[in-house]
Length: 207
Image: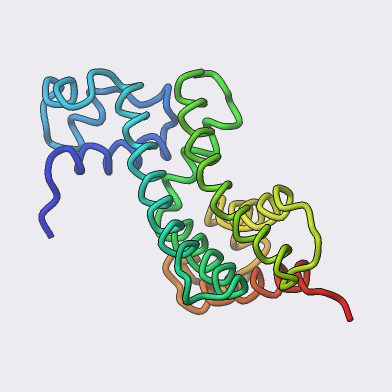
């Protein structure tokens, strides 16, 4: 698979930001590992902050496109949409765990206003799509009346906490097992099954 230079720069930037943090990563570090010159990074992005913002916008847009495809599918019930959202988020967090670690670090630090705002804008749009499914399910008496925002926090927060690092996975979920939680299919299915059970129990209308 051929990756163009701009994609390669973003890919390497994510790896370095996850490993060394934003402050610990220089444009020269990124250029060296991506096997490009500094001028090329300046041409594509202008600065390290703009590169970071481009990285966020790229991945947030991809997630939003996938969520829009799920939430606007008239052939799916609200329950099926929620299940598909859960599967999408788990798969995305596992596949792009380094990216999500970087985002988590930035949200905790709140040191760079523009970057923080870009992250929040991306999350807000995705939140609104999931909230729409929850509100539809409640309106159609498929789901019980719940707090939609906190339901989303429960969904995303549970996945994020479980995927925060390989060592965290090992402590809580895979102790004694020599597996890579980010690639192990059984582990992936375990997480998906658990979160579906959690959300189904939360949304189920009690008889």
